[in-house]
Length: 208
Figure 1 (cartoon, helix red, strand yellow):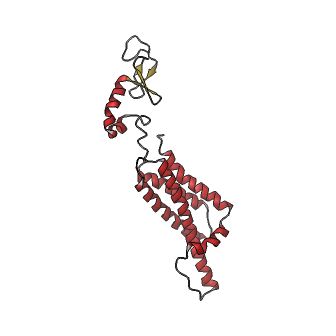
Figure 2 (cartoon, helix red, strand yellow):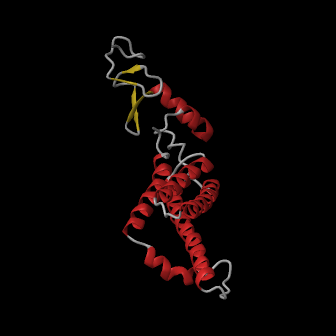
Figure 3 (cartoon, one colour):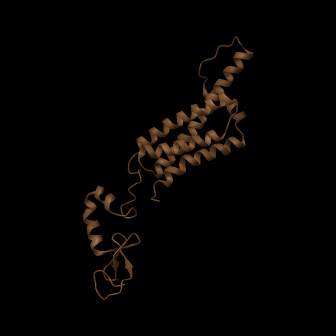
């Protein structure tokens, strides 16, 4: 196949952007990809307008435009936090309805937080992935706190009817109970939930 620019010269590659065949004389290599001289000129001219770069250049040349880490992903973090709080209350509700602590719900919290983070930010990113993981773990701890707070109140209402407890017990007061109930399976479900929260924003930073 001949070069699109130099007739009679055998092409050695094709332009990543326009896909026209190019020879060694007109080949330009950027970020490990081959481009023709015309496309390189157009892309360089558009560098003054970032929006144009994101619209016209391939993702690997335009600086991965779907990555949301150029600024703090506030909307993603806020929506992830909201999803985490909702997930914590759902977990608490499931335990109250079934009288069973179902660890898979913790995994669901992580899944929900990760997707809410990307939905809120409009993209993924390393920073968002880390915040998403932290929010998921805190949300799972919040769910545990709600369960234990209710359990302690129920115990004292049954065994110590005269005891007066605050509606929300301090986390420090519940810590011994939490430590006693936290076992290997809790670690497993926390880890899976945290991974679910982390991996979706992390994967979303790179085009599929």
